[in-house]
Image 1 (cartoon, rainbow, N blue to C red):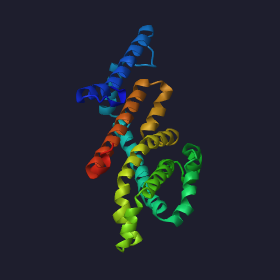
Image 2 (image 1 turned 60 degrees about the horizontal axis):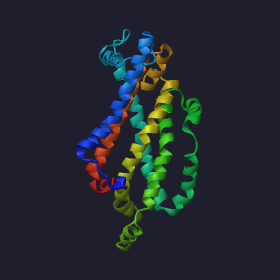
Image 3 (image 1 turned 90 degrees about the vertical axis):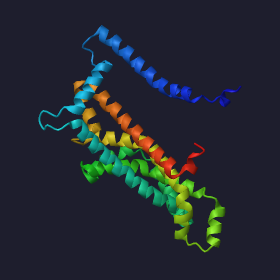
Image 4 (image 1 turned 45 degrees about the vertical axis):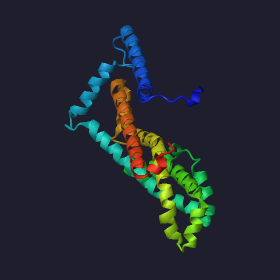
Length: 270
C-alpha cells in the first residue's frame, strides 16, 4: 500500500498529534538538566518545575507596588489591541475584497495598489507610525491593520473572483441588483474564506503586536517579555511565550469551530 493511502486510526492520530509536543518537552527537560547539573545557577534553560512555579506565581500573586496581578492585565491589554486590529482588518478586508472581486472598475483601481502595499514590510513602518500616531494604543492597532489588511483583501478578492459566473448571470437574469448580488450571492461564498484568512493572519498579527509593545508600551505581553529580558529571567519569558502560544491556539480553534458551525459545507474538503 502506498504511503499516501495510509490513514491513521483515531487513537493513532491522537498519539501522533501529541507525540511532537512530548518529544520537545523531553528534549528541553534533558537539556535543562544537563546545563543545571554543570551549573546550578544557569538561567538559560530553567527546569520545567521552575517554569511551573513561576507561572503559578505570576498568575496568582499581585505586584508589590500596585497590588495588581500584572499577568492578567498584560493579557487583557494585548488581547484588546489584537482584537481591535484584527477586527478592523477583517471588516475592511471584506468590503474592499468584495469590491475588487465584483466590480471591474474597483479591480482596476485598487488591485495593483493593494498588491504593492502587501510588499512593504510592516515593521519598517513602525517608526513612522510612532511619529504620526504617537506611542499610544493607536499606533499599535494601526500596525496590526497595516500588517494584515493587504493579505486579507487579496485573499478575499481572489475568492470573490472565483465565484462561479453562472451564479452571477442567473442572479442578473432574475433582476438582482449589484447590491443584492453582493449580499445574496458573493457574501455567503466569501464568509468562510474570511474566517480562514483571519486564522492565517493571527500569526503575523501577534508578531506585529509583540514588536510594537516591546518598543513603546507600559503594559502588555510583549512589553513584559522585553522588560524582564535584561534580568535574564528566562522562567518569566518562557511562561509568557507559552501563554501567548496557548492564546493563539485557542483563538485559532475558536475560529475553526465557528467556521464548522456556520459553514459546514465549506469545511467538508478540509
